[in-house]
Image (cartoon, rainbow, N blue to C red; front, side):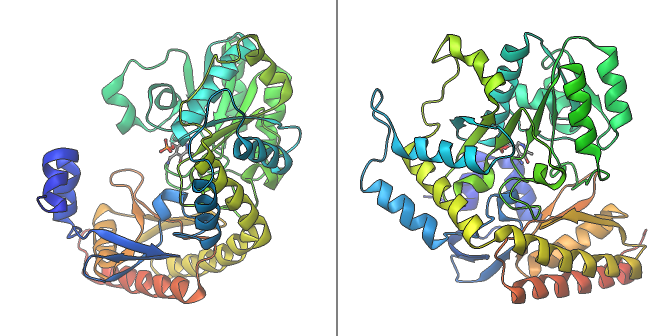
Length: 413
Ligand code: PMP
């Protein structure tokens, strides 16, 4: 084989490969454990992004590995027309831990697929075809999920998307109410309790509760996209729990697979699920709910609750957020804002140049963080919820130094 980078250039994603080369990122990951990743030269990296929220338990948590191995030695693939115990156990577990009367599950393989399923179920359940979604919201890149996403760079090349999707400002219940009044054909409102990809946007307290009430009043379903926030990330098992909100449909993926297997899920209330009862195979997925993914998810739920990873997220998130806020107050020319909930944290920079400087310093120090070019210029931090204190402190120290240097060396701030 040619080098890994050459294979990327020739066979996967030439544009991404060019960007990787430009930023001095070209090493290949060969091993990982907890919040640490190692490349082929044995160099250690701190993974402070965790594949955008997948690695709440860190890389290769031993309980997840053990659960998947045990399943692998029994039944690895579904035998259609016989029942699967891991899927049944997982559905029961999710019904037990999700808010209110959320009870039925559909399993798939990713976040976007969970959103696709929720869109279809909402249309069936209401007989309506429109959706309200939020500006800067992100729900995935398949056609339906992209249609409700509010991130223009990903949408623009594919217009026209699904018709009848209205995008409203996130965090503004009055704007949502106004949109509701303007279209009688709305099936559902889809929203992330905290926007992740859109730049870590935390809505004002009470927002979700208010939109829940408005949805109920209008007979419009509420779809909570907790693909990124679900399973402890924001300091609660589900971000909806923060305000006691019970959505009609809840989308999960990312951390559900325990950082080992891909899996997505939609959990729904009985009244909504009834719509699916006319045809048992109206919406299906070959690999969705496969025994290995379900075994990983069951163990992920157990570990999250037993190790109180929600508590970890709250406590470590508070520590990091307060340190970053203090840093921001000292460097207003570099940092425009710091925000987040639990261990979903964003640091918005004043200028592109500052972002470039800070990211290249992080790369040099072998710390993996998220960064979105263009607007919003936000560095995203999503470490494992069980991240050790020394890794937290090291990442903060490197960020602090990079911000200080950016203020000193970057012209045009
Ligand atoms: N919804 C949200 C809130 C997400 O953050 C993402 C992915 N970042 C998705 C949906 C799509 O998930 P996937 O990439 O697994 O399709």
